[in-house]
Length: 116
Length: 113
Image (tube, rainbow over all chains, first blue to last red; front, side, top):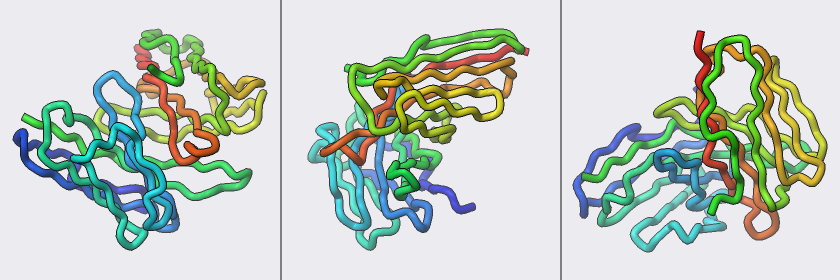
């Protein structure tokens, strides 16, 4: 399977703990994105990388959140001192430019985080 | 505040019926994408529309991008239970927000046999 993969699929943690999620993009894609989705809402943009450079961060990404893509391949998203409001589905997507200049993003299955 | 408004939010129909889902915004997008999402899974890309007025067909699904590139519609002909899912539209940012997609809240479609 050559799609976007995410690990773990589910994570349950206690408030105040740190968690880290991993995303492996489609191999030839140089862009990688993180989104967060809560119940009844569409995904909300968090941040994106082109190769190893983090080019944009949303205001949703508080200082407790950090994302890395050290070698321009896989990425990690860490949440420190988790809060109950962090409970959500965390989605990763990857893309590369296609004909016409558009940028089609393909999503992974997501990591469902529950903070107790 | 949602940049993209989708309507209706919920749609429950019988197999064989036709339906249209709308995605509206006051903003112009460089492209617009439609996704379908199953419970507990990530969104799956259905189509990308780029040119104002563009119409794309994917079997029984017809997608249209508004002339001003601010709105879009998805029409399904003769819906089937397998069409059940959350349909999301997403607009691609321009200029300084080029990397991000702005999603609507989605339309939850249920097709009964």
